[in-house]
Every structure is written in structure tokens, then in C-alpha cells.
Image (tube, rainbow, N blue to C red):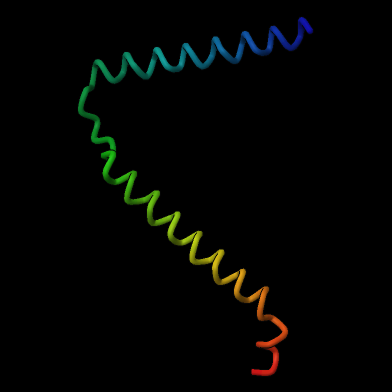
Length: 71
């Protein structure tokens, strides 16, 4: 149990230290050219659409696999 607690403490300490460093960096350089929220939304929508299309194609092929064999 002590080993797990120590690992957890180290992980939390690393994460909080890294977050503090990133926040300090953001304060020093407020405009770093990060991508906008709109860009992220567009990318998420595009990837989601592609996954849905690929999933639909996979379902149709799996369902009609025997019927499509004679084409």
C-alpha cells in the first residue's frame, strides 16, 4: 500500500509541477499561436463523421456479406 501511495504522490506532484510550469509559461507569453477552439471543434466533428461513416460501412458489409458475394 505504501508503494502505491508513493507512486500516486509522485504522479500528482509531477502533474501539478508541470501544470504550474505551463501556467507560468502562458503568463510570460500570452499569445503563443495556439489553435482556436473553433479549429478543435471542426477537427472533432470531422473525425467523428469519418468514424461514423466507416462504422456504417462496416456494419453494412457485415450484414450483407453473403448477399454481396455473388456480385
